[in-house]
Structures are given as C-alpha cells and as structure tokens.
Length: 314
Image (cartoon, rainbow, N blue to C red):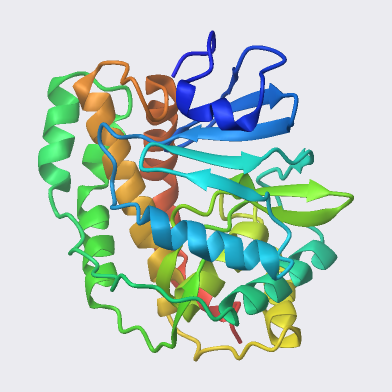
C-alpha cells in the first residue's frame, strides 16, 4: 500500500477527500489514515512477510463486533480481510509509557472483566509452541555481522535461556479466558481522560493470570522497572473485581506471558535486523533495532525482579 492512492478494496469506504496517510509507529504492522466523504478510517496493512502468528481473521472480527456492541470503548470494527483491517478512526491522546492514573487503571480492570464476560464462540484452540532456545546462535550471528547491540545480547545469553525455561515450565493455574491479550500503553488512547482499547488482532484464549499481570504491570510503570507504582497495579485488579471478575492465585504465572511475549518479539526483531534490509511490511528497520535494544536490556531486568513483581500480588 502506498500513501499516494487508495486500494480498490477500500472503495466501499466512500470517496477519498485526500491521500491515504501513513501513521508511523506500529510495532508489527503498518497503519494508514483514510479520510472519505463517509468519515475517517484507520486502515491497517497486516505484515504478510514474516508474521509471527496465525491471524484468525473471522474469529477476531466477530469478537471485536461483540465487544463493540457491548459498549467496550474501542474503535468501531468496519471490515477485515487476511491483509487489511479497517476501523472507524477515533480521536484521542496517546497513552505514554508511564504510570497511568488510578482511575484510568481501575476502568481498564473493569473493561477486562466485561470483555471476559462476553459470550463469543472461539473456534481455534491455542497451542503454544516451545520458546526458542537459539539465543547463542543469534548472538554469534549478531557479533559476526556487527549489530550495534551484539555485545549486550552475547553477555545475556544464559539469562535468555533461563527465561525461556521459565516460560516453558511455569504452571498456569487458569482459568483460560477469551481476551484482548495485548492491553499495553501503545494499544490505548485516552479520550476525555478515559480508556479506548485499540489493536485487537492478537485476541484469543489466554490464562487469566497472564492477562491481568501483563496489563496491570504495563500500566503501573515507565519504560523500565525502577519506578513501579503498586497502587496503580492494584487499581487494575480492584477494577477487575468491581467489574465482576475473580482474581486467580498469586504466583509467577502472572508474569510469564509478558516475558514470553517479549522474548518472541525481541527474537523476531533480531531476525529482521540480521536480514539487514528494509522489509515492505511490518516495522521499519530502525524501529526493529530499537525493539531489540529494549528487549536485550529490559528482559533481564524484569527477570531479575520477579520476586519483587510477585510481591505486588500480596
């Protein structure tokens, strides 16, 4: 997709009143804004070159429709295909990677409880592949090709292998719920100070503890782990209970989904960087390098702080 014309499959959205405009910053896909005589639309071009997972387009779209109909604050889903997602454009402020307000966190917890209460058929059984253990080989390739983060990765290989072992072996107590799976600051807007939930394409079945831990932690901290706000973390959980949800048992399972997802994201971006070319879809190469640096530095920090993170659950 180019920013100079509108693909024919988007003609049903109305007559364009200007060119389709690239909106930069996506970590996995590419986003455009299209203004027509029928309104403004967010058009997401899915990465088809090296997608990390199977996107179950029909199930996700049906889940989004049910959530929107139930009043979940989110962009209206318009259409979905295997290469393009379209939603009504929503104006709002980006949520910075910093602790949100307690009221915002509480409402996110309530939203999660409402999402988990939806009665939506999900036809796909989630089968998690074992976490990759090729970190030593990736580090060797990074050093030999002169990647700017190669030495840092090489120094953390044993830690990455330990994290992979934890993700593969940690017991998940359940229950398993149908959920968004990726409520992070970069997938949220603030409209009049209240949440709007974006980017539903990772939706699927997930252990409840993993969803709650990932969401609450991401909203309670900044870019690192030095300044986690326990009150913000607890506000997400309090909102979840107020919305009718029940909290699962405390334990490391609250955080292994976040570690596993970040491991996979980091490895995927390492492979894009090792290829050394600007791909036609997905994140720009510079953003992939930034994601690798963040993962190589942030993941060992998070892993080392697991006892402190579990203390947030008490």
